[in-house]
Amino acid sequence: MADPSAAAVAHHGPDVTKRDFLKLVTGASAAIGTAAAAWTFIDYMNPSRDVLALSSVEVELTPIVAGQGITVLWQGKPIFVRHRTDKEIKEAEDVKLSELIEPQADSARVKPGHDQWIVLIGICTHLGCVPLGNRPTDPRGEWGGWFCPCHGSQYDTSGRVRHGPAPLNLFLPPYAFESDTKIKIG
Amino acid sequence: MAGLNKSEFTNPVVNWIDTRLPIFTMMQTEYGTFPTPRNFNYFWNFGALAMVTMMIMIATGIFLAMNYQPNAELAFGSIQHIMRDVNYGWLLRYVHQNGASMFFIVTYIHIFRGMYYGSYKSPRELLWMIGVVILLIMMATAFMGYVLPWGQMSYWGATVITNLFSAFPIVGQPIVTWLWGGFSVDNATLNRFFSLHYLLPFVLVGVVFLHIAALHVVGSNNPLGIDVKSPQDTVPFHPYYTVKDSVGLCVFFIVYAVLVFFAPNFLGDANNFIPANPLQTPADIVPEWYFLPYYAILRSVPNKLLGVCMMFGSILILFVLPWLDTSRVRSARFRPIYRQIIWVWVVAVIALGVCGAHKPEGIWVVISRVATLYYFLHFLVILPILGKLERPLPLPESISRPVIGGGGPMPSGATAKPMEKA
Image 1 (cartoon, rainbow over the protein chains, first blue to last red):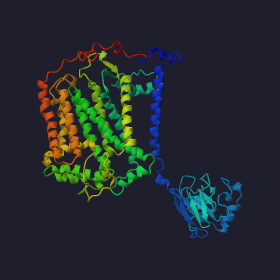
Image 2: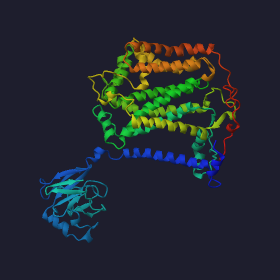
Image 3: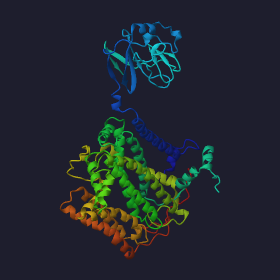
């Protein structure tokens, strides 16, 4: 049994006892231990290293002729890479920002010096469908970009939303030009 | 008809639930104020430890299944994927793998506790028999789990164990084919083993619930093996045994952690790092350590069918142990002869385990035969006769007044009135 004087030292007030302290320390240790163990279970469900290793893809641009786009898979998502014609670039650059649902200049959506290439995450910002429009034979909507078959959202040649219900422009993936004819996404 | 439960909890939310579904009252009655013999020693930790291990096994198993592929082509690789690529996959897998060993260690000690202190005797026979069912489910689950990594030892262990059933005349071979779902251990076998390995732990949970329910009807045995006679003989389960179990749990976790972090493959077999090959049997086939004694019994008998029967019989015999032991004194403390021969039995079991790990040649055959013989002799001959011949020591009057071992009445500080906060 505890020394009574030691118990007296542990008193900090009429209601705090050594036992309260022991309970607190025990409970805290158990809680920290449980939390640490729980973290391993939570992190277990995060992307594994082999999935992370597939987080970048390289795309050769030479085969894509002007006016056409291709779709590549990056992190399980469709990525649109489209070679724009001069007319399409001009349309994208000339539009007034005030007409846009989410105003953004075309220059902010392409890499400098490579404005014939637009690279987009091909997922409609409405509910996640893949819009049509990469092939010239696809419906491209009134603004010549992409047309979402699910709920009729329309995007222009810069991937900006021009007609709802989608609220936002198509997202841009992180990418960089490795050379004039090759990009690396991710 | 049913009425609302009169809840004594003051927290309004708890009270509201408890009035309609008295789970809080139940926890309070069964784990809070539950009157428990005051004289437990640390052997009484092992039920709780087994319970904790079971929950760890289920939790880690569910997560491992998220990345495991029960397919003969992919299984081995998917384990490597878990070990190398999945975040903390190595940890969860080693915790699961060594958890099987820890589960058997604590369960075997738990069973030994029951045998040493006569916990299987009236009125706890059914409690004991449910426990034997738990052991059988554990063994089936462990065996099928060991097959899943689809290494050489997995594959050949599965082949050998399923072939045990071929020993039975006429129906034997059709049973084996049925178990395999083919003409050898193959993809179909792996698939069904995975399905059952996932299912059986939940069956286990149900049977463990019955085990605990039965325990809470008849009450716990104790090291003196005498009945609780008055409230002076008991203490409330909480905080006395929640704390005592926690102390044991800390030691248990230390041992477990040493295995997982410093010797994760100490109890494993190197052959299981080789992918299953149906054309090549490894030179030494040995089961996991917790099956070695049964394996030794199997090999000690020259006749195939008899060997299989004795191996299964060595566990099934536990079902009738309450009736084979004719002594009415529970605790070995008061049985001067039994408290010695129980250790001879333990030595026989350990000897069988050692024999199981060696090739059945020379001296190991002799030892395993002698030990097998003694194993059955203990249950079938010694226990029934010993109960008639042995003169037990005088039993103490009550748990709170031990008369043996020079103990007088317990110090007054330890009487049943729970100590209030100082």
